[in-house]
Length: 401
Image (cartoon, rainbow, N blue to C red; front, side):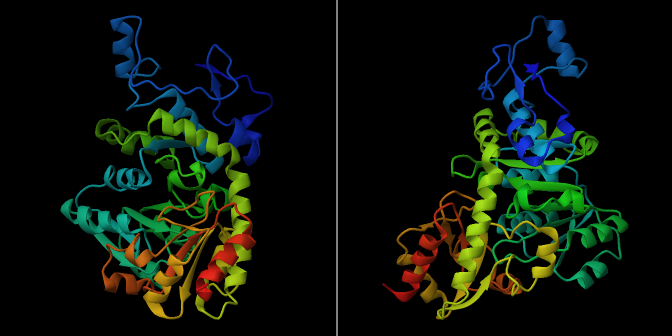
């Protein structure tokens, strides 16, 4: 690989330019599109060179579980977009969260976690952390008073998701980061709903950001992937050996697909966010809907926090609660003609799911109740269709036509 000839100063590039050009390297062939190095391993000119690379004394690729040229282009581009020093790509979003939580932790550490987390993350914290001798303190992420109480004693990490899945609750990232730092800890933010287009946690004080690249970064339902972003030294000291030896690495093919997805992410996310606002406003007037949750609407209980952290839009996700309970929700879902029923999100196609029986089914009734989730709620991931077509599909399904 040879460094691509750059004009100007890449560090001064605006986000849209970084999404197309960031981290770009070209081989000796000078290809226009990023090359796909679909190779598991690499060869050496001599055993001395092989030994030097394995020892870290000489730069170069060794094995794609460790690093790969295509994966590295994706990591460098995403780090530039996010405003992070470095990035490690993983096989899925949950591989990123698992690595982030498990690799640096040791017995006796404490993690503070908001209740409003994705259910698989809750599972790790409930089931794996106690086995490792790690204490987990749970709280309502939107309640700063609870954060103040929880940080009266030291912690190792805090993990938050904002906007949260599925009811789009908000956490004040800057305020929580200050509290966690004062308690000697580091703040991890799952930024998947907002994407780096609409929210930049590191600028707000977060230490780490994690993603499922399966969502808006791919954006077309093709690949699984994840990413961890933070400071280079922290990644090298605390994650690198775990990452290398346990194998959560992203495949080169998936990295290439997501790398190409980054080129259009800004356009897609902003359009999807605009569409979601139109649909949320329209559904809020429907007499068969009890409540609509959308970060960009003034009636969201955490609207002010969302507006401060996501000034350019409320994102592609919304949730709404139906009058008539879970039966009404299932009946509406069964009458949809355009929107696909799927537990994925961030796709070009609009997708809808019933969280209590899908994405959050592993939570107990009490745990769902603690975050305000009951069987009346559905979660809608708004895509790139005409927003009127999406809204009309929901309306006809609600009307029973």
